Length: 189
Image 1 (cartoon, one colour):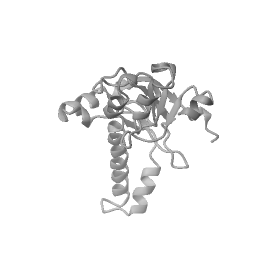
Image 2: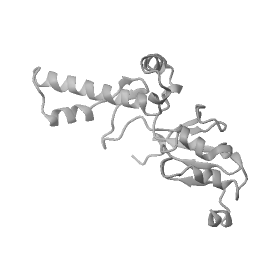
Image 3: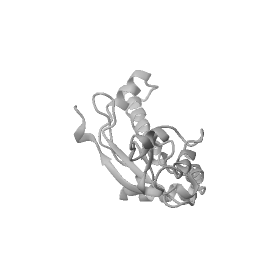
């Protein structure tokens, strides 16, 4: 951190998760950098919405931002019923996280592809190759997080990165969605 400070760093990016003590870095930053949002602590999905990160950062948890490579389902009106039903069925707040509805949608993609492959096999067990082909052909499937599909390279057509911010020093507090960035227009293909 001394080198970062000497080089004039305006933020610190941490590319790990909370388990190896990554968010303790945020607590230690207080000794060298202006506290809170004046010097952001940035990370990826390894720290996003993790109560352990906020607990480790302690009083310096303001200004923690994390990027997650997916659509924030909570911001999608069409996902409200699915989210409500999930939370009613699975009551623990630890059961619902940034990837919950993405996993739900991924299951829907696989289910629809299996259905098409079985139909293509005349109602019999399809080959793995036909299931793989049907997954790749998914386009515009209605999902909780929006339309689902894949491009010719096999990448998702839902190209969004969500940015979250820790709110206060209470590890139980939900992180705020700061922004959702659609990066599809910036891709070279």
